[in-house]
Image 1 (tube, rainbow, N blue to C red):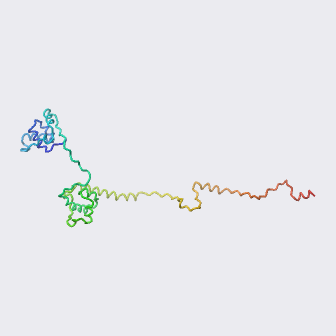
Image 2: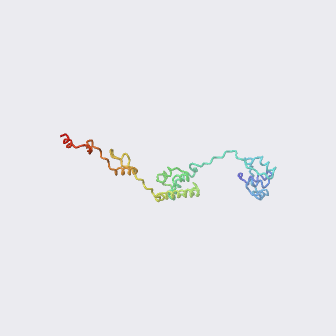
Image 3: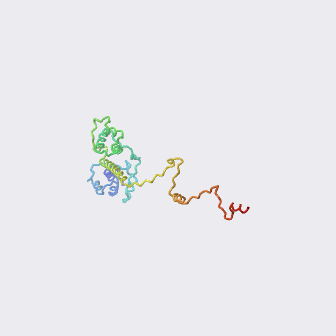
Length: 253
């Protein structure tokens, strides 16, 4: 449950100006019931000025009336009417003006102690630009002579937890990149299929070699003897019943 601002001062005001029970005040302010009782007895928060939760819009008068009428009623914190600022989830980190002169020192420290960090990670950690990082790396920054490498955590540009997470992600990225070539080299390469001759590589007028499916048909046709063509002047066979020319002359004589 959300708590009001300055819960102890709010509890002081509710004890002094309402008839709410200690349990109701303790649950609304996020305190222990005995602590609220000690406030009422003057043993705790002596001399503390109470904070009116109705004036600052944290509690409605209707909620106080409902709580005073019913001892079992639990007070509800009023919803803020002022729109809350949007949280920026993207973009460079905002750096206060007083700390912007410390960014080159932090960049130099990161480049020296954590070279595995990418420029994009340094940009998010320090709230700088890639051109500034490149200038510090190449020692072409306008204030190079006065740059003294210092940890961005000590300078207040980022927390140590954020720095450790960024370094861990960078090392994991390098480890994966180093293991990928080894896995690619260990994988067996598939045998290359024999390349078929292209139509452009066959010279013009040359016969196309027969495929494997057509080879048996060609061999079977070569085994059969080719029939000789019949000559146009072939001699007809001699019939035995036809008499010879000599025998015809004797008969006529």
